[in-house]
Image 1 (cartoon, rainbow, N blue to C red):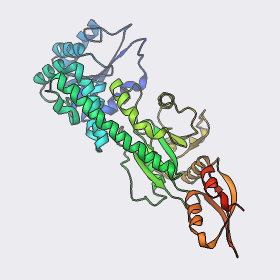
Image 2 (cartoon, rainbow, N blue to C red; image 1 turned 90 degrees about the horizontal axis):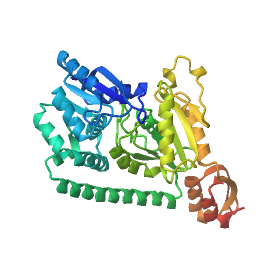
Image 3 (cartoon, rainbow, N blue to C red; image 1 turned 90 degrees about the vertical axis):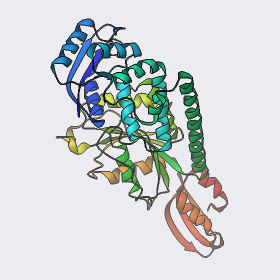
Image 4 (cartoon, rainbow, N blue to C red; image 1 turned 135 degrees about the vertical axis):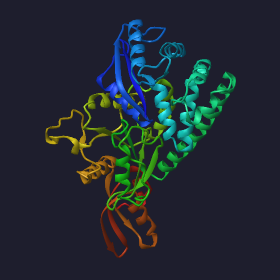
Amino acid sequence: MIPILLVQLSTPAQPAHAYDLEELAALALQVGLDPVQTMTQHLSKPSPFSAIGKGKLEELKVLCETTDIEMVVFYNELSPTQMRNLEEVLEIEVIDRTMLILELLSQRASSNMGKRLVSIAQMKYLLPRLSSINEMTDRQQGGIGLKGPGETKLELSRRNLEQSIKHEEKMLRHDLKVRLQNRKQRKRNDLKTVAIIGYTNAGKSTLLNTLSSLGKEKDKQVLAKDQVFSTLDTASRKITLPHAPSFIVTDTVGFVSNMPAHLKAAFNATFEETVDADLILLVLDASTPYLDAHLKATEDLIDQLGLTYKPKLYILNKMDRLTYPEHFIFHRFPYLKVSLTQGHDVKNLIDTIVTMVFEEDVVKHYLIPYEEDHHRAYLRNYSVVVAETHHAKGTLIQAKVSSKVAEHLKAFEY
C-alpha cells in the first residue's frame, strides 16, 4: 500500500469536522492507499497558491522529506493551479478528495449506467484541468491518477472532451427515459413502490437483500459489503409476501457528506426512483459516532430532491454494535431499531413497511362469480385478502384495496 498524508483546510466557509478525515481515510484504504498521518490548518480563506498557508506548506514539505510519505491527499477540492504548485514544492503526487472518490467509483462501477455516470463526472472534473493533469501525469511514477471510464479522455483536446461529455449525457438521458417508462409501467400495474435511501455503508443493500429473501426473487442478491460505496448501481426487486400485495423496493446509490459538485449533479440522476415512491426508507448506521452528521446529510438530500412530503420510515441499523442499545434515543418518527445482519426485529420491520405502504387502502367486500374467477386472482395480487367464503353465486371476498383496485372491481362490490 502507498503511504499517504491527509490534509484538511478548515475555513469559516468550509469548517472541518472530526469525521471528515476519518471518512477520507476510509475512502483511501478502499483504493489501496495507507493513511499514516494527518494535518489540519485553520485559515480565514484558502491560499490561491497552495490552499494552505506558506508556513504550513513548509512544514508539510519537511514532513514529506523526512518520512516515507509518497502522496498527499487533500480533503478540500484543489484548483489546477494549487495542485500543480503543491506538486512542484513537495515533489510528490498530490490529489484531492474529488479525485479519490472518482477513482474509487471507477473501480466499483459495473453497470453501463454506473460507468456512464462516473465517466461524465470524471470528464467534467478533467475539463478545466487538462493541461495541469497532463503535466503532472508526465512527472508521476505510479499513484492512482484518474483511471476507469474517463482515463482515455486525458489525452483528448478540450473540444473532443466536451463532445464526449455531450454524447455520454445523451446516452444517460436515454437510460433515464427507459427507467421512467419502467416506473410508469409499475404504476399502470398498480404496484406500490418503496425507495431505500441512506449514507454509504449504512446497510441499504443488506436491507434490500433481506426483503428480497422473503419473496420470489430471493436468489437475486445484490453486493453488500461493510465498506463505503460497495456498489454504484441502483437495484429494484419485486417483493411478494404471503399476506400482502406485491410491491417494488429500490436500493439507491449511497452518498457521503460534502459530495463534490461534479458527482452531486451526476448522481442525483440515480435518485429518480424516489420521485414516485409511496414510502421512503431512510437507513442509518446507529453505531457510528457521527450519526447526527449522517442524518443531516441524508435529510439534506431528501430536501434537495423535493421529497419532504413523502411518508418516511427511519431504520436504525447495526444496533448489535452498541454496548447499551436499550439506552439509544432517536428524535425522528417513525423509526425502528434493527440489526439486519443478525436478523434482529426484521419481522416487525416487514410488518411496519407493509402497514405504511398500504395504510391508505380501504376494506371492501366483493362477490366474484365463479365464471369470472380471474378477478379473484387480481385481488390476490394487488390487495390484502382478509377472508374468503364460497357461496352459490360465487366467492365472497373481504379485502383491503387501493382506490385503483376499488374502481376496477366496483361492479362486484357486495
